[in-house]
Image 1: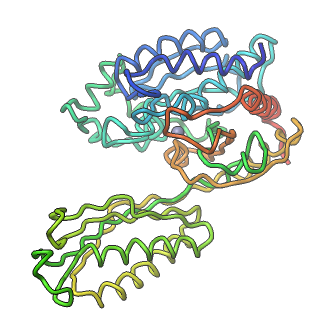
Image 2: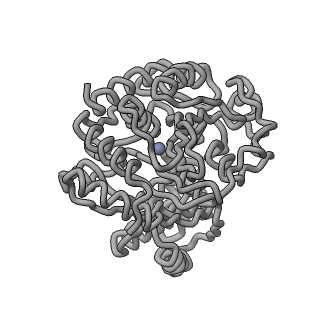
Length: 407
Ligand SMILES: [Zn+2]
């Protein structure tokens, strides 16, 4: 069985641990999570790793330590969105696991110690918190997050205890940056670039920065039959200006994407003029310079358009996460390994957030993307091929075996 076939087989077995329904739904601290960890623990041991469940619900597998060597952390998240796929997250655990198993079978010792981590949660689909596992390793976990509630009123702390983890030990999980060689994550691309270039893998240059705003537009409700058009203060008509401005600005700006993803109309009735619209604006860019310039232009244009409308408006920035640049040294290592395996080392940025956003506080981060079918993710039809899994595994194996090699 090739490494690729083994990765596909394990992916199928991991996907069984899901809530009922389409695709894979596996949230932090649930029975599905616990059952997965039991399987994963067995597979890690077969790969020659010593296994530990830490206080943040991360399952950590370690290679036999080589004296004096630093530790490279490799991993991804075990959790999914509701009705997600088999590969977003789990590929970044199972693919390195199969590579380490292959190296273990051939008796190969690596020049660097490896910690393979199945992070407890990245998607944040159960609690308002996210990046619980990776922020614990990075030493940035805030203990108040343990009080975060799921929709049934259970706390994150309780969910971790259900898993058999002891969250009181989280402060001791922070790694010593001097002992860490870096963080490397394998992940499906979640976009169509590699497919369009006919490449199995790509090197991530940056994990996108994200900002989110809420905009409230206030007009006046009225009878939709009796209020003359020129006297109306229709909040939805004004809101369409915002939708158009966001879309046009993002189309006209390189390395910027954005969306008005949420739009709530009040009173939302067939025969009433909309009195209020609450909407969200999200901008993403691998460059905070581009993103901030775009934001300023965006709100200048919105101000210009809405101040001419008969409505009032206000806006608030709700969230901002600066991008993370991937390490040049790790990108170079990945490029060398991709070339050694006979592929073109294509570079691209990640429009989605990842555990590297948290791990960057600890160490330099790198990511290897794997082509996925139709660029689809967060969907039951998420798919990769065994051949691509095999190519990516060979790239990773080469990269780990040559980790010491510097330019
Ligand atoms: Zn993911």
